[in-house]
Length: 322
Length: 301
Image (cartoon, rainbow over all chains, first blue to last red; front, side, top):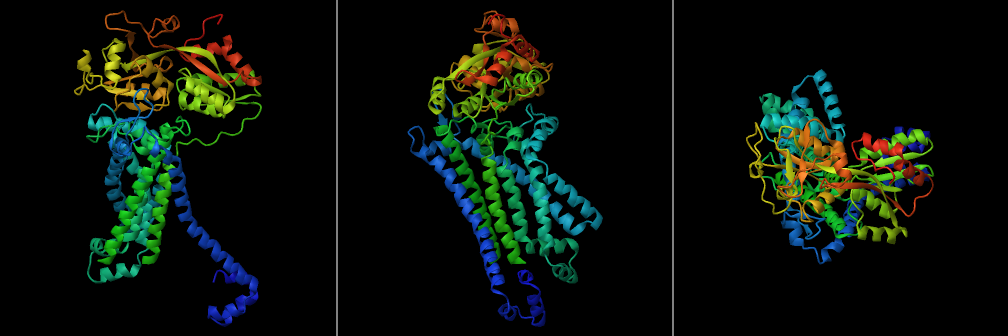
């Protein structure tokens, strides 16, 4: 219907006389038809461009990284499985990213463990249990929380949160895995809540009514009907939250202590892949091994998220088949 | 409805991938705007960033038509930008290396020129509650270098009151820092740092972390001292008399980690850049060095 409004008054009248859109199209001027075709192509292009962009980004990052794979000073096994990261050493350069990968995964893990229950819980509360006035207030506040820039979160992590961490745990250094995880969780929760709430809202009211009519109480309706019905949307909410956590750079750079270290407890400092790229890319001479290894680290990050997304996708399909 | 939400989650995945990549590449600096005739771009050392800002602000009063833009990132970042010719002046708390000079000549056809603008004592900081007063370079290497054996304060003979876990918390700098390289060269004898140190992104952050952590030890410019931290006196070897990090000891080089702070330009500086550097070297510019806690050049240099 929207495309018809461009066709002029005569067409509008024609469409009013005969409800069938197919017959109305016969009377439309050529220009209008062409415009519609053009628009369709444009929309299709924008859709396809997402794929093109992702492939192009991957290609350019990998192109910057690829030459180092054949460099004599570089071993892929060392890159993936060694914890020794000495990119600027005078005597013995080593490019082992295992500690950084573990750092990224552990901070993300802590963040997910905190953010997913809180985020989904808050989404269910906002969508199903709270009154309309409180709901509006909560939604505005949560959206405000999502708008705080990451460097501000990092600053909070470095100053306020790290002192709280010291006070609560008695650890000597406040900038550590737990501190970074809490900051990341605070950053992901608003995303999980607002998208999760949208997903629950999209479940038709007839589902709720049917569940209640069958004698389910509100909790049973949520648990047995709404969550399964909104499954895909909720998973998207969690994935977007996780995506922010894995890709976050500035906040973790400031809040985790930036130490190349395989963590043995929640109170150890770590360094993440993203923070490492941000801290070192500026000084690495373009074209040097160090520069290319940092791009390879970017490729590694890309592969990690790709794997996470693929697993999530397969999981959804598995659930759906059952 | 099912279709709609599936499309939503598919879109979400692309957004995840894209945002991840943007996060990953966040470190790449955006291109600096093209300098006009009256803008001087200065970049580099975090040690010097405070004094460089103070110079820029004061110079605005001397020459209002000239804008001096200062940014940090570390000596390595400034030198890398100078090699590409994107800035006018690189601040550095270490000397430019021969291969960096070669690279700059190859890229721009000009020879980098060095100006020593101030002196600094690279101070070793501990928390104010730490009873330690002095340390030798050998002990520092035992604490900071790869293969060094000191990991607990008791191993260097220090008992910090009110602390149950006396593991030494090493506070270091990111690898683009000139201070990092200076410390590695003069304290660790070019050996590598022990992994697991907290690598801070600025001189000030080092002092802040040491101020908040009783068991920490770190190094930073003497200009960043606060009442919550203590500068240790340094000796080259255990048994030799320790020297305090003071202006006089930095100037006569009796302090083991005395160093110069310098500015680099491409070729002989011209026009406004030359005027700016001349002003920094003048008594007016050197007064600001002193106000920021560093050591001004001796008269007649």
